[in-house]
Amino acid sequence: MKTIKLTLACALFSLLSQSVNAQESQQTSAEHQRDDDTPFQLEDFLPAKSKFNLTWRTSYLSSNEDGDSLIVQPISIGSGQSIQIPLQLTDNSSSDTLSSGLDLSYGWTDKTTIFTGFNAFVSDSIRVSLGQRDTHTTEGIANVYLGMNYKLSSITASFYNTLFVSSLLAHKSGGDYVHGKTVTLGWNGFYTYDPLILSTATVYSYHWEREVDNNRVKPGALFSLSNAVSFVVNPVMSLDWMLTIHHRRDTRVNNVQQYNVKRTLTTMGMGLTWTLSEAMRLQITSSFGVGGNDTSELSIAMLYKPG
Image (cartoon, rainbow, N blue to C red; front, side, top):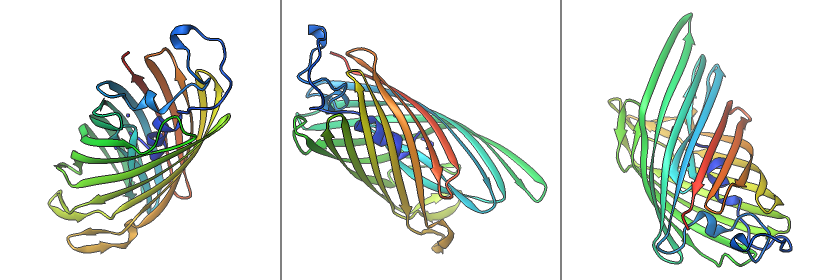
């Protein structure tokens, strides 16, 4: 499920709400019967071989800053993952961003999934400086991405993990589009302990130099660490709590190091995943920044898995 849609908390969220061995099996219809009573398994989110999943995501991001500070803008990179890009704000600034996107995942082999997608957005921003008020509206395609997931261990184990790699084929930066200048590597680990699902994720993004508004910009490398706890409420629902830490190295503009862009930011979130039917699942996530990160976001995702 930009933007740039989504904290990594939302990104992590689309995979953390799965489990394999949680509760004793209840009586359900034969059509929906599983070996366990947990609402989700990894296979529900990563398609089986020669199968596909389609995910629609939309989110609303709001920020309001006074003085020199940074906000975090999430960029979806597909397969429910996102990276967080700190943006510098000065004086009194506020912005509202609505974004929406589609993600298509295809099971290439039993362990490998290929995914691709795009995100569109519209953003209104207001800046007040020295008594001057400036408003600006931006809209268009936020990014197009391509990537791959690889299952490292069996989904029937109490502990399992996955690797993923993705590239932003094109994304909007300033008034220009940048092509193929960002690559992201990530790892997800999950451990089930009835009735809890513990998960962690690490993401590393490298950015090559690009031309942005007639300036040569070399964004600093980004590292994110996320931890989450998912509580299995019943066979169709789980509740989730997430904590994500983002750290970005210094950015260089026209070969001049920008020391004020290096920053560690923290995001907290909560949400739920709800099975509407055998083929459809709804995810709702709310997140907010802490420790100098004054942003809040509400995102909704609908996953469709054909039989």
